[in-house]
Image (cartoon, rainbow, N blue to C red; front, side, top):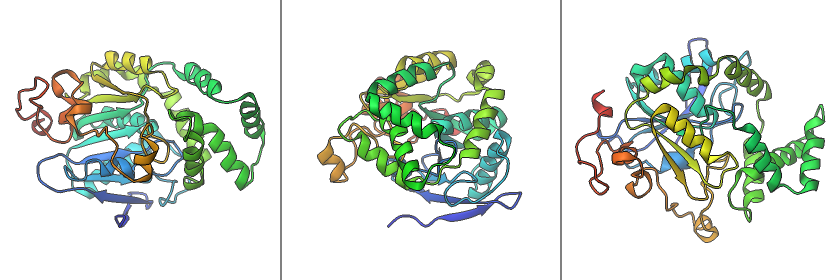
Length: 325
């Protein structure tokens, strides 16, 4: 049974829908998942399930999305303040942040504002350099000429009906997926589930990140990034893996590129064989397993929620530094 949602009120009266899952073992630090967008509701429930026996995992709909109803001007400072308020409501002094796409940007801005509250950071597809031209080229290559023409046609329309909006989102998102056989199916499901998209929120927050880009704070980010932090990407993502590696080099953190996979907008990892996905079986690459994450130097990434250096890849087995920072 899905966990019950809990609304939490912010200092301005906005009520954000939240979920908490996972084991309160006293061992792993709490994990907070920050969904992408901006303008989409939370879609990371399947990711939270990957660590449900290790640590508590928190998710929430950002204000103005999903079950977090709100109308107003969106700013980075307001969203950073929301996250700080949520940590207080959950009773956590320090947490591990895991952000997907825009969520990784939000995690970065939060780190700049509250470094004392971030014990670790996992960025899924974050970028600190120009990458959109390469991404657009890769996505165009995955569409037929007819699909690209239809996308442009729908994009230019001042208003789209419900069916046209779903078609537009599906055409926009199916090229995100590494598996061409199921890409359209997954994107269509996402387009139906993640409606409506908060377009004003998207425009306002994208403008805010352009006005004060994280690129302008690279040195400060690198200095404040906790030990063991990491970047995760997929080799089948249209967004260039080499850009992620360069971002990791600039920040001085580990980068893991998972072969032929990325997280789809509605949360299920792609690249899983169809039979396994239909059976609902766990994907073979779990963040918390050393087989996936100990590619980082010293196995630090595998310690993200467990709090130890894995011995199998040369780690010492000692407690990692996150709990003691």
